[in-house]
Length: 83
Image (cartoon, rainbow, N blue to C red; front, side, top):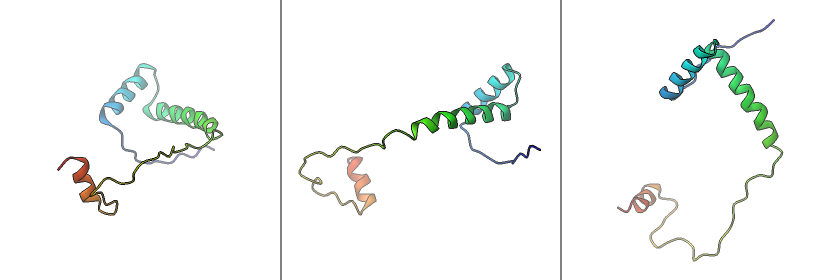
C-alpha cells in the first residue's frame, strides 16, 4: 500500500509557473513532476558523494586588512560595502 505525505515547500513563483506549465504540457500532475525530478536529482547526487570533498586552497598573505574584526559582523559588512 502506497502511503503519501503532504508537505509544504517554498518555490520561486516563476519556477512554479514554469513547472505547472511543463506538467500540463506533458499530461502529468505537478506532484508527479516534482517527485520525478526529485528522484532523478537524488539518484544523480548519490554518485557525487563518492568524490573527494572540496579542498580550500591556502595562500600566503599578510593576514587581515587593517580595521577588520571578524567578530564584528556589522563593521565587517560596512567595510565590504565601502562605508
